[in-house]
Image (tube, rainbow, N blue to C red; front, top):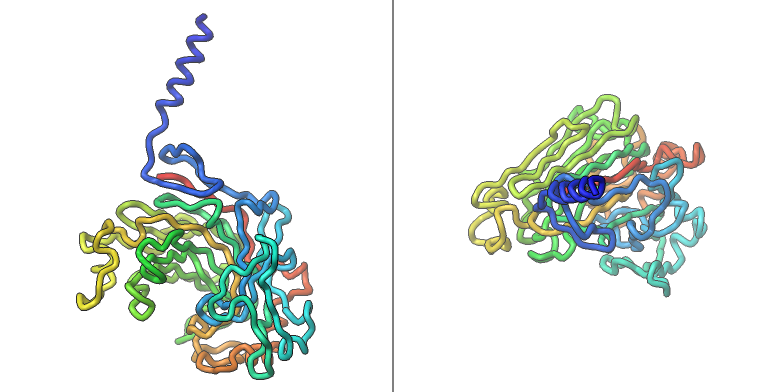
Length: 373
């Protein structure tokens, strides 16, 4: 009887220890009950869990006319030794170089898992020509849009950035439902972005592997984006490609804070005017967040994305920067894909794809963890 009573008291006290959280979640891997401080999502990558991670399948270039083709293939995304690898490869290695300038590539498969995920920007079918070749690089972009979405919490991703000219790794979040409208009205949270160039120099500073950036994108429409007031860079003289680091986001009802290895990189704590005021937007435009909280658009659920992009023409790789092998394309060029491919003798050797299965050119992720507030 005494033992039974102790057991009842222990169970009761455990139940009482659960403090309700402001964090909200949805998705197939979202917990039914959330206690403050609890670990609510994790992947240690002991295996490749395709229920947690959904692959994107598109030629669209992410809105930046990037050069990669995202697909679901173990050449480009795989797990071993407790790590996730997102690795680039050459499209010509699979389809042959002549196909790039003469082939028709349709990636819209018949099964649910291999259907095209983004039709915009000729994302499902392209025809290669000599002037505009097909996407010359294959890579991967993984997301939790079906499995795990959350609002408010602490995210930590332990990862190692890739090495290789014009590689663009990212760990970030997008809104699940776009409650305030299409990008950037519903926001974007870039936990970390980097560049794979070892010696990409702009204004006398290395902006390649030695630099990591964190950014919030928000605004009423693409031409009015307040990202410059919520953007921070940090430097590591050894390079973020030389070892693993913990990239962290603390997202509360009052602020968003970015950190690397527990050292704060940047923070936004909006006032009563919210992100409209923080962005310094002109009152002549409609405020899409006027009926949201002061954290709008960052007061709704977001999902996690891990990807490795290549190149692009949006200026992330500026034309004026210097690199040991000069940048082979201009951001204004109508034939940027072809120009990039013609310059492969400069960038392909820096990827070292034939050494150690191209692991150095891969975005390597040790774990992803999310805690409730």
